Length: 217
Image (cartoon, rainbow, N blue to C red):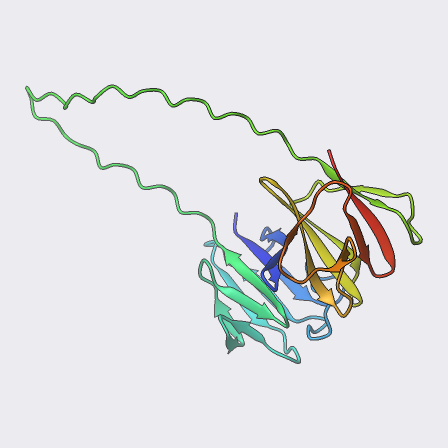
């Protein structure tokens, strides 16, 4: 299934599967892909799926325009890997993976035998990795006492338009990064930029007037 991977400053915010004939992008909350940023129009652009599976992106008369790979467009047929730029956000188009090519059929003449294949050792089973479980516990602010489980690949925290940060789940742990807003998140009292910083249990995160604790396990 084709999808759009939404990023800002290299940080993945979310992935949106393209399951509808018309997927809208814009700042208004009724859009399929909501991007809460002043540079994004209320109804900025749409992605249109054709019956053959191809996808077109069309600008909806936005104030600041829609760009594909840094080129302004009105309508454009997307290719796998194309980058749709909307304000400061980038949406990478990931098309369906092509079906694998099968080996060509070999016809044997009478009396011919297929070449013997050398014995192949069975691969050793890979050790199962223990699942990573983590949560964020709110220590101060209106939601004090609330605990949020980090079950998604990317969880955003903060207040849109004021200060937003992301906590991303990776193979070996979790990382924190600044996404948008004038106030940068503080990790144990130190400012965090858009460059992801590893988290460990007990770390204190301060953002938009709220203090939280990262808990692993």
